[in-house]
Amino acid sequence: MFRTGPAALAALTLALGACATTAPGAAPAAIEAAAVPAVTVTRDGDVWTADYVLDRDAPVWAFYSSSLIMEARRPWRLEQWRVLTPGVVLERIGDRDVLRAVDGGPVPRRVSIALTPKSENLEADYGVLVFTDGSTALPSGQFDVFPVASPGAVAELPRDLNGHEMEGGPAMVTWRDRAGPILFRGRRVAEATEAEADTYVLFGAADLVEGERLITVADPALPAWIGEGIQTFAPRVADLYAERLGPGQSARPTIMMSWNGPTPGMTSMGGSVLPGLIVMTFEGEGVVDPTAGVLAVSRWFIGHESAHFWLGQTVRYDVARDAWITEGGADMMAIRAMQSIDPDWDARAELQKEVDDCVLRANQPVAEAAGRGEHRANYACGAVFALVAEAAQRRATGGDWFDFLRPLIDANRADGVLTRDEWLDALDAVSGDPSLRRDIETLLDKGSSTPAGVIAGLLERAAVPMRLESGRVVLT
Image 1: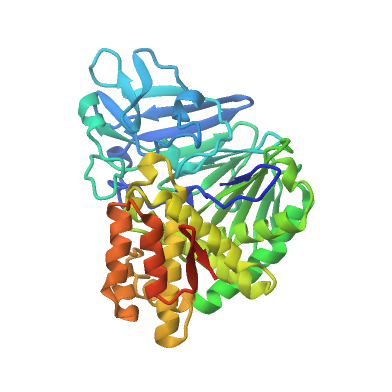
Image 2: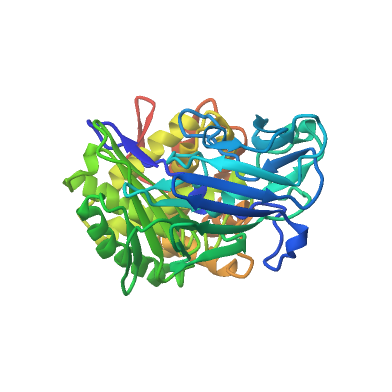
């Protein structure tokens, strides 16, 4: 999610959905229908419903996807969903949205919920896309639930469910629209049924345009220059990434673009990536016309989102604490791609934003930033760590960030996971300086009371040109 006021373009603070991993406890691709909940999501005009058939008795069913609205930090589901089944409530317990039986007994096996889909920018998650013509795209993962023994047990669940064993698997979801076909995986179909679809499902008549390199679905009111720019620039970025990093997760992605209107005093770009799909939301008077500044930021934005087909989809992080690997890494990929495609673009200014933002947030553990709602720390500090790795690579081999990254991607294509230790082991190998790893781990796990000093030391030992100026780390 990128947002600025009218005076200046601020740093991109994208939603973590760009590289979200499959929810832990999820069943493998082959799932027996009787062993998981079933959900039917239906749109009938303006009426939306989700009808659950639960596969077992449990007093509480918790939602895997239980994110908060960005900035407001309120649970989005409690504002957009309303339980119709008597004796069942939808509420928040700890970090989870849950369905709970009022009398403490098991939740009825059949539960109906009325939906009011609304476009919101969510923390580290995929939000609904609402188009100006009424078309609506729902992220498939928001319907998955798992049984929990008690409300108290929900409160004890970890924020990050990766590696946490749970009963059951992802729901088998059916999507249908009484008005006609839905768009599912780039095709119009009467309805679709799948578990772990890991995509967006589009209800409505939004136009699908198939090109040689892209499939685009654009809000009819979206400023024309945005769609045109994406269609011409995204393939150039993808070609550069493929040349430097090998094949990515998708060679011909679908891009969905929604438009929330020309809100005064705002320039907003938000997005995320799923397999074969990039979703983007634009808003504000600042993006109505393609000024030089907005054009540069939109290209950088495309570069970051496209990067996730390599760093986030081809390989993903192991646990949510390691989001800095994919988010900061994608930031650095976008910076180097922009620098390569447009030599006049000021890469140093963008890197300086990353350094400034990391210094501002690294007084507390970066690995715990998401729990504090400070997702920007993963982007900024991850990019600073990438800058350190790139400098070490340059000193060792004359290479750059892509040269550091490619062996890590190639070595992990089979299992699809790039762990923190693998990343830091690569840094040790290329730098020969274990103090770099030590200081990065300090910032990740503890933070520092003097983050500027720690970051300055990292950059200096890695031979990144910089100076300390009145306590500020300034790249030179």
